[in-house]
Length: 412
Image 1 (spheres, rainbow, N blue to C red):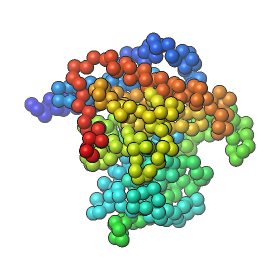
Image 2 (cartoon, rainbow, N blue to C red):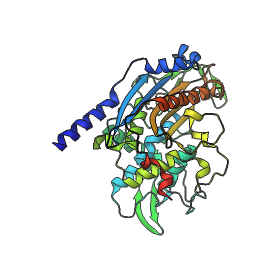
Image 3 (cartoon, rainbow, N blue to C red):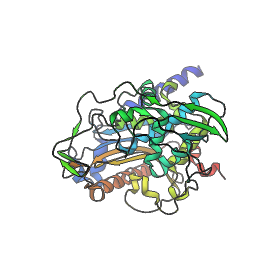
Image 4 (cartoon, rainbow, N blue to C red):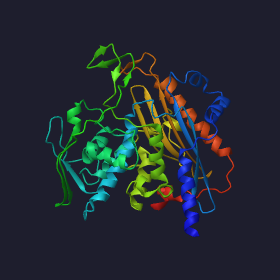
């Protein structure tokens, strides 16, 4: 009897992820606020997509989801920029766990060699407690300040082929991880990834050869964006081709975030192979602010809002400690993306919100002229605050126990 009850609960919670409740609900809440008329009246122009999940708890603190969507489509491409780092971080931890090698951990020293055109080696990291790089340290930098080199090194650790195969096995068919970020590498150079060695002190615990993906990864159809783009300082008067670029839908970003924050709500095949300590590690650095970090140490170079678009984009302020945002943002070519699990420990509220907007009035890509400050950041900030205020007023039968996400309490 207990098994059947559990199975019924599992089916209900998993199926709830795919349902759209009250078509038009998000737009109605936005219009009622009076702050989004420009965006909503030009929603196709700004290529807006929004996904919002209400979370209710039962008497056993188990999460139940109700999801609402606005213009969410797997067929409308957006350049994911740094949001693609979310699955890469989880996959890197999973790969270490799958190796089943004694002593091979997130903290193992990671020495990166080079063996192909465009590759660079790494044998030290002054920002690390040990002065050496590691998978764990790169993940910290990836979340704390969205460090591109950190992502690139994890991409090289995974290898292009393996990163994509792992996601396909979990059911993700719309994700492509094809290239390093902020590095002018050819398609062929991105198919090759570096050899590397892992040590615990002087003991070699793992060696990985250079990897090569023999399968060409690109969109089935051409993805042409804008009316022009800048390349090496020259204006090219034709659309920019994103067919070989990274890709992920907002729906997939949403599910990946939920599987990390609520693994118990998903079938094992859908989850990442993470241990309890891995989840705690992710929860800490997904929500930690740069000024709270000792290794790497950023001092006051970055304010809390730096990687927290929803609720705080562009505010240059510190955030009340009662609020924690577990998220990954992206910003490039006029696109702003954020996918976030937002909680307030004092008010006992929680919700998931994800959004995409494209602000590029001149339709020229890579010229550095985008309306982030005037349109993009205010949209993200106001959207997050709108649904935060909505959640404050929403009735709940049971208040959530959010202690599993409060990493500060674990360290006291």
